[in-house]
Length: 319
Image (cartoon, rainbow, N blue to C red; front, side):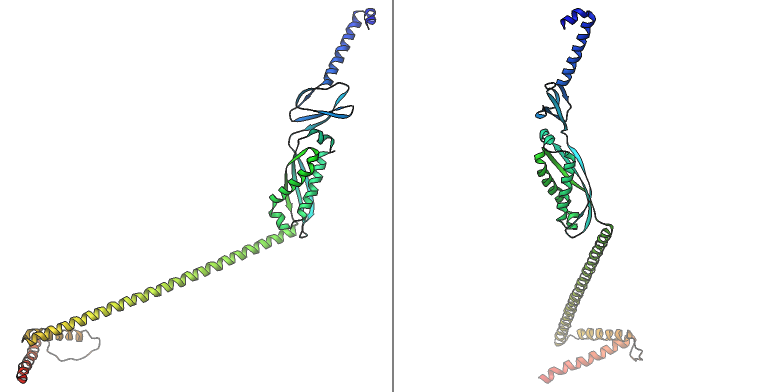
């Protein structure tokens, strides 16, 4: 090369330097690798895996080492397509879902499995068919969380050798046939009508019980009221009889002592009361009686004289 430089002159020397610079840049470009954040690259030497490049700048041996697989280490999503599944009670349903996963070992994900997304999709579909096929339709529709948990455990365990961590498996939709949906709606409507009828009957029963209790309480209170009124009436009659007896005793004592005025008062009171009752009677009668005050007083005086004669004769007979 020196001979060529001497023989060729300055222009040949400049060309050689340019070629050397180009080659150096090419070698540096092959040796220095810049891995973006969230990715990892595998490195192969003569076709054999030797190491994994982390995010940032890394160096490899030019012409000997090469980048094998560039892997996304962030959490990724795989859509699980809709498929028809026969449940335990022979109901045909359409089910689809979604799977979230993250690569945790770049070497295993690159060399232990081919077409990772397709493998995850097929694995999830198979296990969804297995899990839902062992459940009745009502159980499948009401236990989404249980299905998701069971699918996650099974799929995550199966993908562990691939260096993949499955974080979530979610059932997006379970669609029964239209005729089955209509039957379920009719059944639900019948159940609601049944509950409404039962609640209405219970309300009527409670209302009747409350009404009977109220009537019973009313009857009891009325009976207690009549009992109390009868007791009060008896007590009043007893007191009236006692008062009458006491008045009679007082009158007898007065007559024994020769006090005729008490008898006059007693007879006049009875006479006036009788006149009041006769005057207030509803039936029509023709009654002849002294209505003037002098006649009434005369009648009372006559009765008084008769009583006086009786009381004056009684001691003579006793003597």
